[in-house]
Length: 76
Image (cartoon, rainbow, N blue to C red; front, top):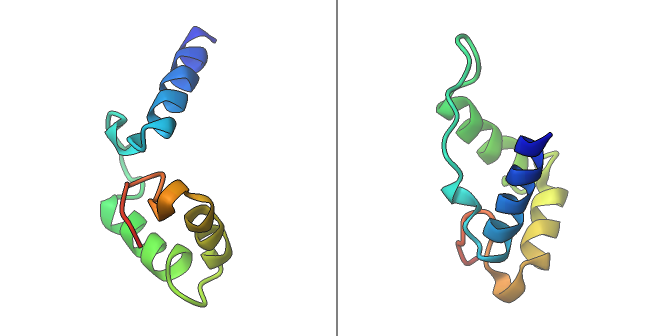
């Protein structure tokens, strides 16, 4: 449980400083999804207008202080 508590503290700090991208990359399990799979999922489902996940994308972007994405720091 100490690992979860430490990770939560780190997440809160990074979330308030718009630096969630700075988390260390974890190795993907063999045979798991790769970066291209996640980029494709993001572009075709989450961020694409009309995509099934676009409602969540819009809520995240609209709730961001100053319009800056809380995950990547990008402005619209």
